[in-house]
Image (cartoon, rainbow, N blue to C red; front, side):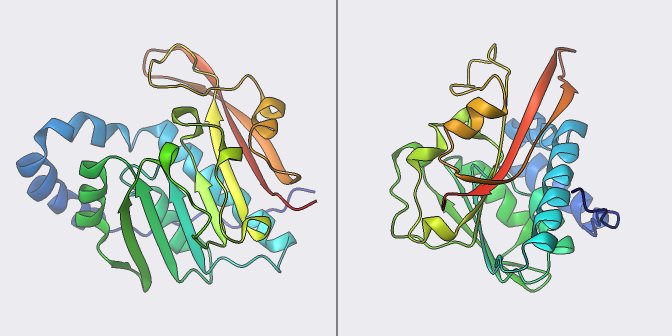
Length: 224
């Protein structure tokens, strides 16, 4: 059943965004300007809004799921997804952004700070491909960059069977950095380790080079 939700809110201060863009990115990280702008592309915003919308649907249907602690794997700058989550999902106390890109984390920290609208934010530089997460706790784990890293069934949290995983990938095999694309949601689910799916879907998108591709998303848990 599809639950109709109110329009997704995004209350990020665009004035603050413009000021910080000029003060931080243009002056201190000019080499990241194109990459930073890409993080706000229409496809990026569309897919992250889609994620939050489906998360709200799941939380409405599965009210027992907690969202106090959220972990973002492959968080990149986090400037689109973090405000969307905080502005729309009730009960978030902390979000940890994890990425191997030190510059992206530093820029994200300059924009979002250590606290955003009462939610604690932390930034951790780690290569997910070589990190043991079994001593880490999280209620919700989000990875919108699964095509860039090892299959998610290799990632296991301390409370793994209780974690709600929200994962996105695509079928853009032609991009060199995409080391783990999938052909469809069935393949994606098989490599995720998820046993109980609450949602699976896909969107047809057009890349910057006008190439059409599929973006896949699955939401679920690993308990039977």
